Length: 455
Image 1 (spheres, rainbow, N blue to C red):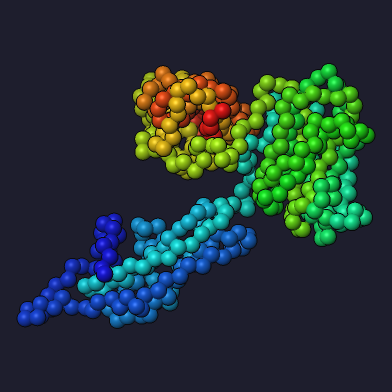
Image 2 (cartoon, rainbow, N blue to C red; image 1 turned 180 degrees about the vertical axis):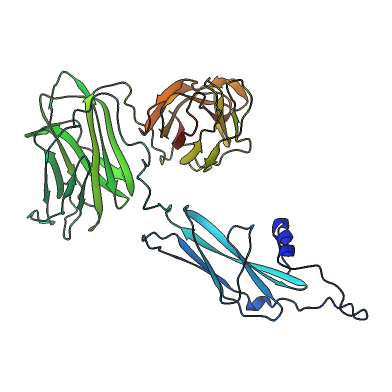
């Protein structure tokens, strides 16, 4: 059966030298050429690692048999064509994780056929020469970090399942640059058989004060748990918490806000028993301050309660940016259409007033209800200070119906969580309106982990 080629591709074929068929013989009305032999068509895709070890290189091969008068083209995006003879391949780096389809088109003078193949990219590609960027909220920042100058001893006790101890996780670095280690062979799976102790020389706390604490744990594997126990030095029974926290692969932030202190010196104990042998960990960005109301933790994007997880941006997604005289200017450069990550660059000419840098993100499949209360959060990262970012989760059909319309200061290069709790809902479709009026032109902004759920 013939396939109908998209107009953008069909138009491009004229550039490759294809023209409409003409009669070759006025008696037989033959159009010339031969039909494409579909049984001879074959396409394959293979994903492999590049020189940095990242599995983001796809090689698509035209595995078809050669046919006289037939020309082959591969498309990796459904728009552009690359002529690829039988047995030939094209290779490119695919930078974003996801499911992809490659097409093989075969054309003779009077026939056209298409087959396809699918492939998966498991992780986003990262430029190894680029400077590290925050991957999301990286813990508390408000107040004086009592651990900023901490010079602790880094000790460990790792043991086989018989509790005999003696295993070495290979400590390297420190909690400021990153304390690195790996689960050694024969480590037991019972809690406290993979202990890490960051201790000695810690600040002295007070039982009459409350504190905020956070720590970043970068895990080389997912579906595991870590015990996090900020405690009193020399007293294992006095602590902020001794809970086990689930870890996913990558950056995990464990945060405790407004917890009661104790009289004594601070120590941090951790336990990673149960993690697979060979799992690499990094512990960094340890933060401790007297309680500050600005220290808030975002909600968990991956929670099953999150109404925005994996929701596409709606059809009416749009910008409205203006100069100081309220004349509309060009839309910002932007990337992504995902609630997990969306980025933009503030355009030249933006004005300094509120509402002169509007972003409207509707969610066609998300509806709220009056009479219910909702929690909301996003994480914002910017490479320049934002004096006032308006965050307005609202009714798509009514600008006067919203969860909040407050402005928030965002410091440069500090992942900032903006959190709303127990807000009265409304009857209608949900839209997130953001305004960057007054933000310096050229600022790179990333919005991460959009979250909305019933309380």
